[in-house]
Length: 187
Ligand code: IMP
Ligand code: MG
Image (cartoon, rainbow, N blue to C red; front, side):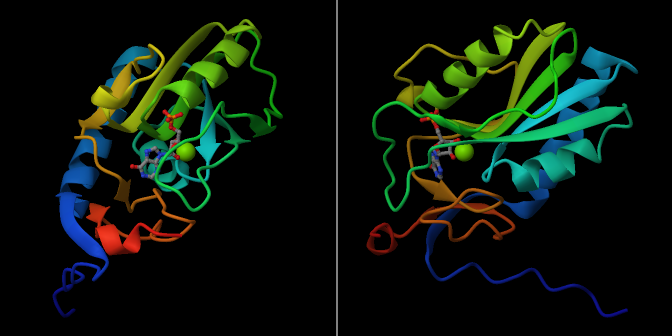
């Protein structure tokens, strides 16, 4: 079989922050961390659409626990790189989470508004346990106090796309995580 070529960097990216190989190694390590935490217990995974879809799909294949998967959706950034106001839930849980081990998965922890809203909503449903796993964490941007139990990578305060993260719904299918060129950060 011919050797697989590494895809060329997308022309709209100014730089690559996390490569495909780094993501893949870290996702495997997170899978091992999850296994240590949960043992053989069943996990109810709550993925936040759309950003967490790629990360969740890869992460779940790194663990062999029984899994129940649910997806929820909050209001999005639209064609902007800044979050405005308070996020609202536009599609809530369909599974019952009471007395379950719940793991919320998201692409990025930024201001903290989205995950603190979701965590308090789920806590109100009295799960057996609640943990949050994010691929990326922009610690310097927090507007409400919130920390995730599992973090893939700490990143600087830059707007990033790829591996699920978008700008105006584009770039989610990039294999790496990169910073968009300023000229491309306009709706
Ligand atoms: P929050 O500000 O922590 O509530 O983050 C809410 C959501 O904003 C995240 O789940 C992402 O979908 C999106 N977001 C935050 N920072 C970025 C970024 O750099 N690129 C793409 N989406 C982002
Ligand atoms: Mg999101």
